[in-house]
Amino acid sequence: MRIDAVELRVVALPMVAPFVAGHGSVDVRTSVVVHLVGPDGEGWGECAALPDPTYTAEFTDAALLVLRDHLAPRLLAAAADRSDGLAADELAAALDDVVGHPMAKAALELALLDAEGRAAGTPLARRLFPHPPGPAQAVPAGAVVGLAGSTDAVVAQVVDRVAQGYGRVKLKVAPGRDVGLVQAVRAAVGPEVVLVADANGAYRLDGEPGAPDDARLLADLDELGLACLEQPLAADDLLGHAELARRITTPICLDESLTTVADTEQALDMGACSVVCVKAPRYRSWLAAADVLDRCAGNGVAAWVGGMLDAGIGRHANVALAAHPGATVAGDIGDGRLTFTDDVTAPVEVGGGGVRVPDGPGIGVDVDPDALERLTVSTHTVRP
Ligand SMILES: [Mg+2]
Image (cartoon, rainbow, N blue to C red; front, side, top):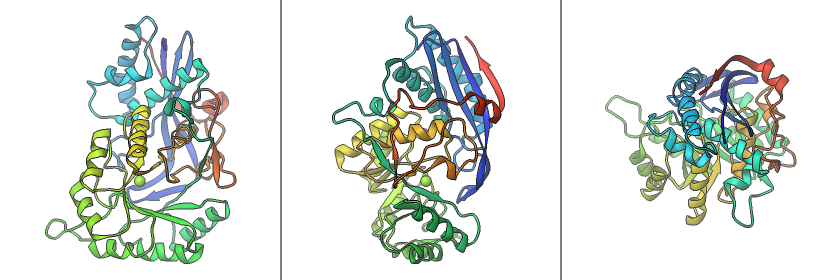
């Protein structure tokens, strides 16, 4: 794509209710929307970094800064160096000397992929899985229920989701809000609903002297018929996860720990996990995320696509990624209207327990200019 300008907009999405997890609470979802503009077309991306640096080091304000002052100028320079502009699969090399900031980088890549898809008439799902028989036409929905409110409030929300057709519900858990919570949910929804617990790294196993040891809680969670236990220990504790996997029978899924194709294969090889949560922004790249799904499919490893309280651009892109046949388990693909009261695109809609995969070019939906204007907090335009 030839690129004249990178427009960055910080948007503030009003939430239906605050979202609470082991890493803190999100009350207003700010994120950076990326808009690439060139002589041949446009492309849209969205940065998944959360408003606060409590989930990962990245956060909205820092993502804006690194996009505006470091990444967008490199993208523009690389595009100017080539007569036909910059391709999505050339982006990683162009940004390589900037350390870290995977979510900001993935936002630019998504915008390039969207632009290329719009220009070629190719849906993102097909770009991410170009092989026969092609991507799925619909993906199963999966709900994520946070820790806000009492156990009764969480149970009521899960019951609502099941009534809305969700066959898989992921519960956020944290030490002290775990075993009783999962038991109460299971009692309310019965044995058929697939339950996953996501700890966001909140537990400690055989920690430093004086630090809490959550081995008992983790053993109790193991008794509750969970489909998997997601990221129970700290992101950098692969050895701990491998040890825990030997102690419990519930499959361990890793999320925050997996940031590259190589460390995903290492985690699987050493037994730190048997299920992979794929988030393109965490892998810095939608193409890399598709590569992870290719490898999971090739090795018979269960994988699913995770979400990041995504607005419409990222959420539709997640649906496209989840259409990859390597995404064998229902992921965090939920109805956007359950999270936000307003959005920059038409919402991802769940019906009949699933979501239709966008078949239009690129991310498959248009950004609503009025909604974008309404939700924009600040606009920053970077030119060559
Ligand atoms: Mg997670």
